[in-house]
Length: 124
Image (cartoon, rainbow, N blue to C red; front, side, top):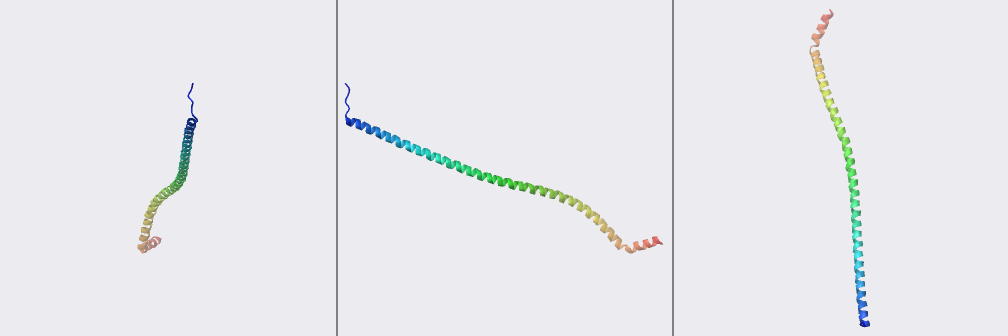
């Protein structure tokens, strides 16, 4: 009939199977540890990206606020430039009129006696 297997052979085979099971358990445990480490690393990277994104959002908001302030300043400068140009034009006209008034006053003062005698002559 069949071969007879000794107890020693059975125990040896059971020992070999036990070693394989233990080896597989250790490999599985190590694989899970590596997987958990990788997951932890990914979580850390996601957190870092999120923090950097928040920081960049704050910086962008700060830049937008500055640009809005600069827009108001640019508008103000443009308005003042237009006012200055207008005032310059008006100032030039006033200076021109003032020059004529001053020239007339100088003419009157220098010829005051002649003008006074002419007015007296007209009154007689």
